[in-house]
Length: 233
Image (cartoon, rainbow, N blue to C red; front, side):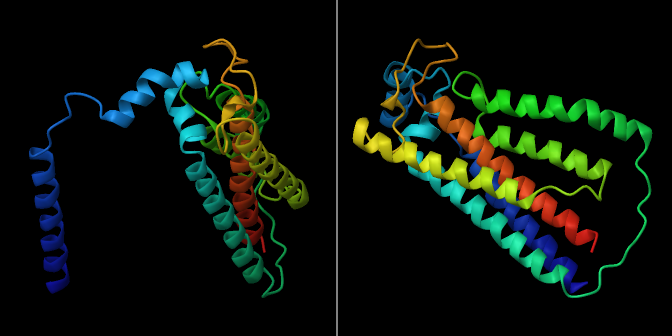
């Protein structure tokens, strides 16, 4: 009884705080100095139609590198913990029920389309909403669908590791090239900016986001594969 009362009191307090913030919120009538610069100069400076992508990949490229690093560490820690726990007992051979015909047929049809959509999302991240993180998550969802269809399917850990490592190394190399040949780390102008709105525009942003997409997709896939193999042990 006392626990429930404390929880309700806590929720009431949170509600009061958020209500005060909501009622006292006054939207800005105009952009601040930084926001105005991004809105007015991003397309002209970087050649990217998607301003959000340009900010994430170039203006705050170091933050993006940090986010990718955190995701990599998370995937590595999850894999380490799962592999440690998986070897503690004898693996039991158990017969898994066969997937339904609908799921199997749907998987064969949808997996290539999901992979294609993921690639489309991060390749066109400089033109439309989307980008490397979203595209990578879509690619990992194809891996999840395969595992749901066939829980005993085994992916190559070495291949996933190679894709993740090479993508990360090239990503860092492009960032360093920006320091020497453009205006700073991950500056996309190491390649010609091109015509605004075309596929081959925004300098190195399409390449950078493609690398981020492959890296994120490999990291998510690694976690999914490790979870699947642990469940079968």
